[in-house]
Image (cartoon, rainbow, N blue to C red; front, side, top):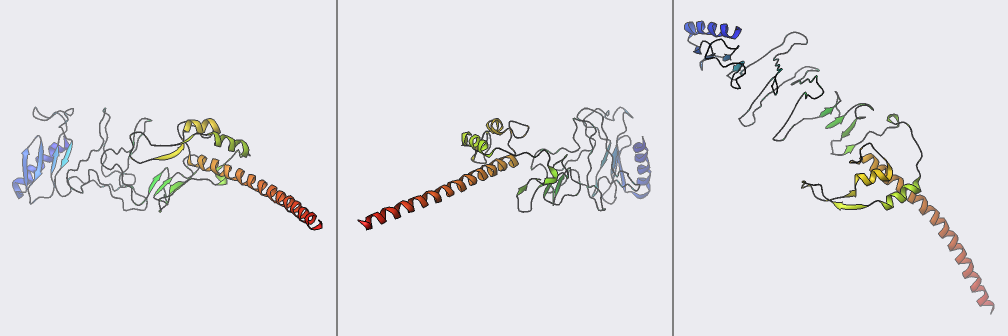
Length: 285
């Protein structure tokens, strides 16, 4: 109803200034090219020609102009524009762009800790933000996941409950959190048994289904889990676990090499002694 009365006000102004064109007293008010503000409002079934609020074409507020609709909040915690929906598949705020380099919804934050666009979901099955189609989501210069102060291009979490600060470096390298302070229940491993399990592991060359990223080399996650019991999902292999198994195997092999080197030195000494004795006997004859 407020928008309807605003339309009537604009109509009165148009009679005085010739800047407002009233398309329909029950539907909309729009400025001329010399005006500055355009508003089209529907508050429900005011009259028979007004689309009902359940009509997909009905619009609560529509703005046309250099800035179609602008909202400004001057109170702490206020919202410049607030959208709400309680209907199935409803959209609290909907933005659409059909022009090149356009923005369906554009948010700008100029404060110390503001949010350009903020989405909040209260239900377990809801999304604070959903991005689909095109190139998905662009975050520049950094993207924080459970991290309000990201220091890297992608920065995940801050503690043992949300990611331990794992991140992608500026050079494109993925770095896992592995500090001693993150870990508990440390235990020794049987290097020889691990080496035997690794030797028996079937390692093949393969490709991911429905992917064009090329070949990979590695074991099946189910086999890896059966051999080492690492992680909590039989379909995935953590890079930390893969590296850990490889390092443990290298350590075990290194110890074997040291033992073999000592045995070789011992055998070489025996051979030298035998050679010396044979040479001495030959000289005596």
